[in-house]
Image (cartoon, rainbow, N blue to C red; front, side):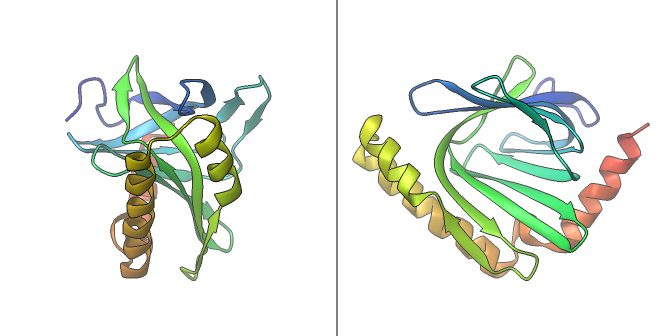
Length: 177
């Protein structure tokens, strides 16, 4: 288990861009589980602050999965019509200053309740790839991780098992006052 990440404690989530610029902060996420290679957290109606200072509040409960060995993270959102997933292609996370931190690499995969999916922001990825000089090796790592993520989706593996999301959500509810 990672120090400071005991179940029930609150952490922030910080997303950065490749050039080191802060991209977005989620104010409060409850830790549900932390091991040496993953953190699972949950939040609901949490404040999110964008790099330009704008802020908004999430609309529904979300279970978040961060990994030290994979170049993606997964957010499962529990909505009226089922579980929707938003997957960020990103660096593996680091934990410091009571926050989970990662670099967001623009590519996103949106997975619908019926497990169909869409790859998003390929144009944004290409633009930032040019602007921030992503090295060729990084490009290959990220594309391999998109493939790995889509394999998980097709296999209903890890976060893509609806039953596991419902179990994590039940645990989250026990931490709410």
